[in-house]
Length: 273
Image 1: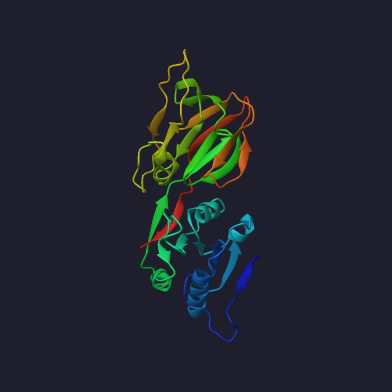
Image 2: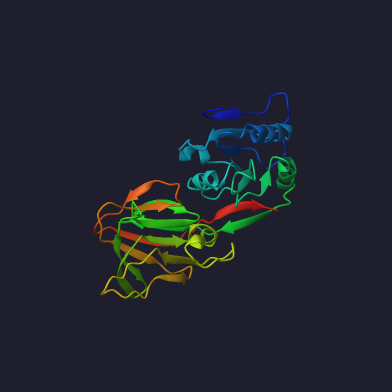
């Protein structure tokens, strides 16, 4: 099952009165059983849909859709989220024992029931805060979980100046994580960051493995930031990178580059029940 699959209503069948007229399914490999359930349910309710593997990278495919359905683990969900602006998303877990599925709100056993609720508008939208980042004023992919800034190889020392408000500090570490409330349950949690409620609009940063040496004493190692605050990093290293959600594109972050991170005006709209 590769490439783009298009499935439209038969001309002899009346169009459903549902508000779901254009659905996109984004799937990972080895999810055929779950995809069969999803396709059968969409056909049953006469909903037009298309399907693409998660490796299909084209923002055009995500446009003008009424619903995005992701089938896979959190990596599939996060990868798709980079291309979604305001369209609601339903995350479906194909196998809850093999995939983390933190964002999943359905599986192949209850998908049709959940789809019925969406058609009946008996569901809620959970707005998940995202981060907007720029390097030298050039946009980076929106991040749903966290942004990593530092050396491409984590065992090498990252050097940078970190700035929040009128406070700044030169640091050496294994890099910096800047994360959302959703991200506070992921990598940031593993780095002893604070877990925030999913509906929180706050975000935070945490410095990974700070290296003070003999002369540097750090005061800016982690902090919960308000939605209107901005965090800035100035690279003091060669071959640094900035990556969104650990699944996105690697952006160069070399000596003198300026990274700014703030809360996005476009939260991700997660369909929940």
